[in-house]
Length: 609
Image (tube, rainbow, N blue to C red; front, side, top):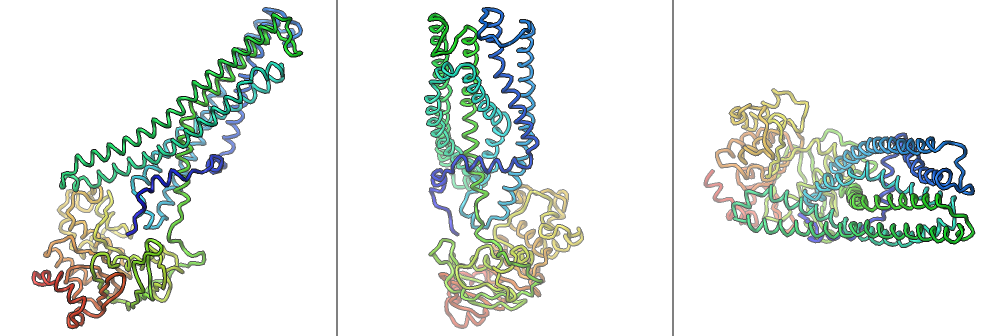
């Protein structure tokens, strides 16, 4: 099978999207929750207004009551106590609005996350088999878990804080310009330096965080593989080697995170230092103006104005520092969102034709017409395969490893598309019918049986969820699985472990055959279905298969003679071509490729049988 390039993770880090594109797509998910967002906007504006008005009122307390300056006093005839109460009320209102905006944003964010998770899961069900051969399960899981978690951390407190801080910065700048344009411009002299510092450091942090998302995916992939293969690891004494490999992968993840945090950690002290410079400019310039007669570049300067501007500059620096503190989460979330949308943008290798219609109930005729297949463009796995299977026939496919046997049967349910030629079922090109309607009428029993962490009964009825308990038992009897199921602690209601843990390979295979029998498919594919059972169990399965195969078109890939001897047609495949075809007896008489396979691989099996 085609495997992804070894530098897949590195390639991913080299394909960043523009932040505006990612944020624009994310914003689209919030559109259904616009009333909550309007509430957030109103709360942000009210909270910002409270914080913008407070320094001006404190300045009025100085200019109107403490150090009277009629030229700068616009508060009116109110009392000093009333002014202080107003300022206190504004602080309380600001706190209430902050709480409201965080609640509304979190509510909308959780709904967006739920929709994203559902879309991701639905998309994973639609992706073709080829995608999963090119991508490790741990890496895919990382996008649904870790990347979604980073997004969840932002869609609430962080996002509102950053948005509210940006609004506050702009509003304070406007208010300062309204009070004294020359003084405001002087106070904001360091803004270009702040902008340049923020732009460079955040850009570097985003690149670094994109790498961290990929590295944590590698950690998950290694962990998932090590846990799944723990038996093989221990059997071959690979514990220390696996630990060393995981340590190296984890170290790469650590280094990537340290590099990312280094940039974000440098942002806050840099902006804080520039903020202190801005406060020093306000204090020095205002003090010199007072000493020089209370005028600065043609505008009147009072002690209250200086106090107000010091408050504004301090508040101006607070959201900047807050944004820089939360920028780590924001950058990580943007990188995570890029990976989430990257997965959603994956186009399935196999998609229904826009004009595809459900295939009618099939009889079971299968025709391969000069079929070519390739997992990698230009590297053919099948090279002009042609044959016809009549309804009810059993077709055996044999050949050496890598000859293309599994590829042939994978094309019938259209797990992959042909690179040339046609695959016809009852005269319908499989590319012109709805894949789901086709696959519902095809049963597959693989060598590596997959059982779910569910009851035995539910595993058997997986292809027919509406099957009755009696039908489940009948299918198990047909597959000779009933006796061992009855011996389980809760019988058919026994919950199996992950992948059927606790059952032998042969028992898992029997349950897979029972599952196929219950689904009652018109076309049946058996890919080394009896390779994992002993000879005695195989004889039982063969008797069950004779009943199961009756009246169905069946394709059998097997290395044991017992499943091939009675086939209506045997196809001998080598290097992607059919080199011989005929019945078992006819091919033996020819003493060709099949005879050599029989002599080398099957003779011992027949002697045992």
